[in-house]
Image (cartoon, rainbow, N blue to C red; front, top):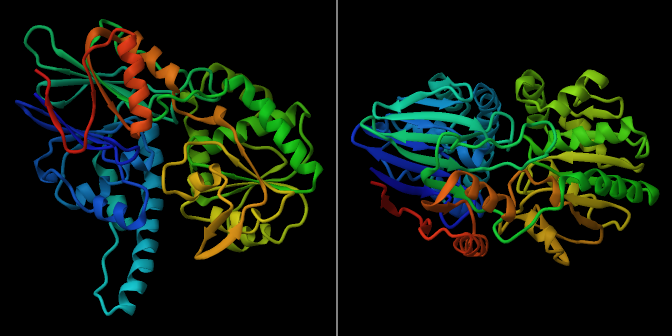
Length: 467
């Protein structure tokens, strides 16, 4: 039995891990690499395995860094089942289409440059048709329902509490005697976050033999979830008082819905001024519709709020922006407003236009509510670079930049250590993925201090024998 780390090893994106047994091969996640345009494009086009040789895929959740290369995998010959939750399947139906559109736009941008050099065009990574075809291979599985991605593997999905439909995965390998228990906790959510239930244990009937766990926030600590409302309230109040706009770059799935929940709650409790909120992202609008469909994923607080208010994501002050013309009109607006737009790391989409028109004015603010990977515009905002380059032009950064760490949907350092202690024995083999070196190093040190001796910081393309 062998495990190979094909992505998200020594880096945050491109999650993909191959499990090989006597009966075949199953891929855990098939995510897209994100970062520098050229480097990411080159990595995304290469598979380190033969797709046609895979029997199945188990998908943890719909975020593109976990699901984004599935259409390409299918286009290269994969013809097996893709097991995931129903909510994840519904989110992928819109997210992979959106990703295909981005691939098309990126290819057109690159080909304009290639044409000027007399070079031949390159095709997009995949098309909308490819994104539609791969959905035929999705098999929806409920939490706690066992299934077999390989003849000698039983798998079970548990609620990860990360985004709608997200899963922690347990793979029980081998049918003779006690199976080898392999856990997968990428991405692990946080307790006490809005809308979704808390992360579940994947070792309710015994400790795991091996655990693959994310390390995104190793060495870092989030603000308590209960502080988020007050921080958002304070930020909105001071921006409105100085007549400015609050621009919130947000991931369309998960983070946007959390922000809308808190805004609705603050409006309902009359804690913030009556200011219009514009959700300016087609993907965010569609994703919110999927959230409305899957109330079975809500926690008790969200269900109570829904019963009291009649809606979680709808309020008289919240408007969902559809057309590009309406989006452009927001940048001509002179009155206070809140604009929530994608992409979350500020690398593409309508958010770039809103930032370009907002960051030079002191009365405005940008709220950073999620992790910003290296080499992204979002990271440069977090670091408060004096000058910010957008669409090839340089703009002075004069507005307020507020980092609200409490909104993160990932477990922080303490949360990761606590989860490992809950599901793994001291002799459990631990594999740290989904993190940069500055995150994996302190997390590995903390786990060793907690009594875990067999810890591997996964390296790209490395393989390990499990037993």
